Image (tube, rainbow over all chains, first blue to last red; front, side, top):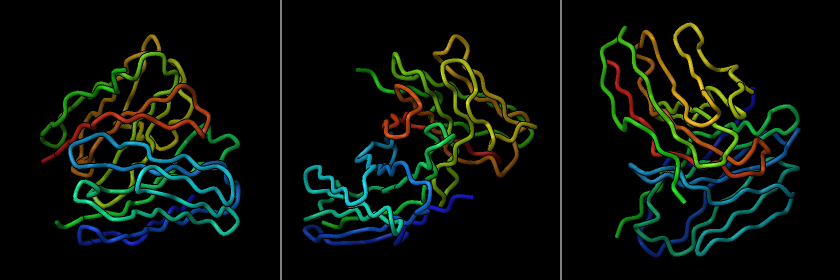
Length: 114
Length: 115
């Protein structure tokens, strides 16, 4: 059974604060790590797909890093805005015969207060 | 480009009733996924199609859940009969193919409440 854990479960920050979340995943049989943002009543939206150890990706004020040897990824948001309020999900793929199957963490719920 | 469409958006039924959800993936996407997301948990893969064939249905409760993807395009997921624990958001996603570094494009989901 693959275990993907995210922390914290929820987070409240003030507008302008920077924040970060953690995703832990099995370090063996790693193929890819996905980050999604899911706003209420909308479709989950892909943020990053990361495959290489040491990879760092950035989209606007959001960035992510990947450590496949120790099995974790960090997502950073710089200068949080109320529109960043959402559930942030990470998902792990083990490659091999998993045929693109993603195992999701339980998500981190971010609330940014004006 | 149109996104993944799902209907209905919301459904309330009584336990032991039947329900069906519909998904229309992005045009040309060969791979289609159905996920179940129970409150407080991450989405769990129920079934994965590659064109109209099933690639993975290991977590589909086959005694009550069924899914099909006729002609390799639209898909339906059915629950018959529903139980209280089936209350969840059912998400459909599609991707160009099944390789793991392809992002999956999600629909808005169907929120099912079983009373």
